Image (cartoon, rainbow over all chains, first blue to last red; front, side, top):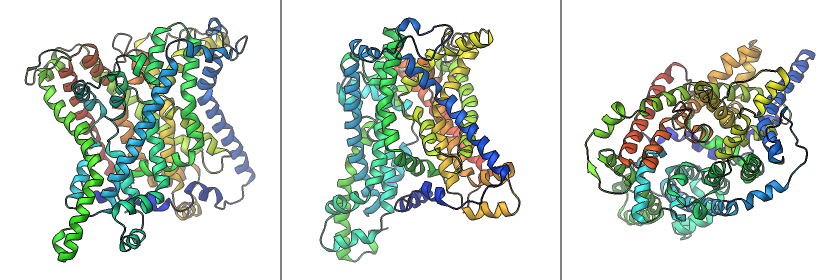
Length: 309
Length: 303
């Protein structure tokens, strides 16, 4: 496998500096509509909005269910809003089980994991993308090769390694094992390669070493790519389920939010109101993140997702 | 990029740069060695051992692999369930998200907000999504409640019937994953060169023909990429059936990854679980390779 196979992604890195393609297409001129075209457009809007309504209805219904008294959960006929809006359900979630601990653990693990991934990937991406050294391309291909190994192959021996290290039920076990995947390094290398070499050359002539040029020139230029990687990494840690399920035994001390949520359904099997409130609470941070950073997400999907082009 | 072509002075510079590069890359290399290379090698070894979580390990050769195919009652059903899930999920998910991306054309108002809306379940915790659907699918849940009060129809007990349970795992997964491929296709559609689309329009291509003969072939690399990624993730499905149905009723929705999880962490048979994980890996590699071979027939690259 040649590393050039994936070089078109670098073009995305260059496009980064231009306005987002989304906006360009919004602005580009369109032929005026005929009457038939206008009617079709109205129907297109109706269809799309109807689809969106159907799509979002499970979440809306779950939100209002979280506000119902438990006895009305499965009322017949079903109602969207219960006899009262019981906001106290959201507070009751925290009284049932160590829900606050789960949220705290998830934040701590996701933030630390993201910081480790950012530090490791930007440094390695710089070495692969902008420094010359013997065996560089070979090592990079090895890096990429590890991307093919599915998580399922890794978790079983990884659990054994955790036992040997005495890391079962610990924060390091939740943070480190999947913080060194090659994806971040790959993304950063592709982006760094798109930065013109002249920018760095000038600083080098002035006597700046690679550490200074990495910190003061390359990283500031790569802010948006780093942001993309940070968002995706945070989300993957926040939502991670299989690995925390394996490496956490004592949920009350090291359980993350997904683990707590899943155990919640077993413990309070009949308290659907609290389960829904807990589910809604766990959805809030990621939903806010997506709404706040939608431009970065679209860009990130384009950078990572169009790798096949 | 051999160093021999440099003058001696540049040779020292190159050596310095090599040393510095090693500094930059060593955290990544160390992490990758400890958390990827070591586990991969260890996994191969474990596959050949009777390896309980606690207690003595014993070399058994290919016995784990033989046992999976001949003595393990849940293995074949798990393989079948994984394939059934992938066969239903991949085409439905790819086609629906493609239709969605095509419908959300630039003429639709508020499409930015709509896109975010369709993307929300992709990023919310899977466990939360599954809990919501589990509530909806209860015998007294919203779906059956509406069917009874509006049409007087009693719907099947979705999660207790083997066939319906699998269908609902697929439906829930399609709902959850739709937004990801939609964004990939939207990004591809937006990068179509306006000149080509305009030329096709002048030649009289409209509506369905424009989409089928002009747009789809031009974004076929993205469709290919999305299909491969969707297939790989569908073969690794775990959380949806594990939380929605517990793999049941019986083992009717238990996929291969849940089988691996159960063998390793319920029955403490890490060796058997490792062997099953390698079979999953082999299936992924083979199916991906087959798709790469088939792509020549339908994927058009510009260069």
